Length: 232
Image 1 (cartoon, helix red, strand yellow):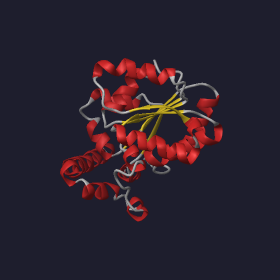
Image 2 (spheres, one colour):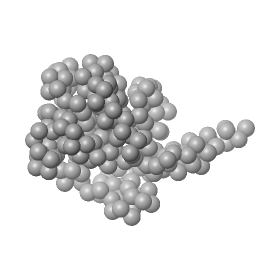
Image 3 (spheres, helix red, strand yellow):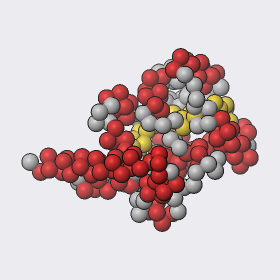
């Protein structure tokens, strides 16, 4: 976490751009078939392990990762950094009520000065250029994109060269939903045990059962296959 935040601050101070992405078990599985998503992730400047399962798998495969960096935790820390350094943030994604509540929450906690602009994530493909232009004209230093995978990764990959004035671009998934109070995050003890997926499944079983139960099984098989391959 500290290393990531240092890179973010350096990029903003030096007027450079960092494209950040997190990976979890589900995204690793998606990347096996979605080549655009794979290219987007692999071409990013920083890749953090969001899911604890990725940390465990890396250790099992003798390629240990220092620690898990959850996307929502990084987002919260970057917001604090923005408040202390007077950086500006653009919030893109989620429903209108959710993104507006997220902006209101951070405005109340840190002041309106950190808000460059915001827009919900419900727009058509032909409107993407307009969205990008709005972000650029806001003069944001930081962009958070709260859209589902692989749409957010592919959006950032597609337009990052047009967003060069934005120094830190990051997909944050469902983080706005948590900040706005639409969904709850798992208790700390479940986070520590790598059971956030189970807590999410219990909250939204109809929507999440296939993603987690089937996706996690596929991830385990991929890890075992890689373990066997590296032993040959």
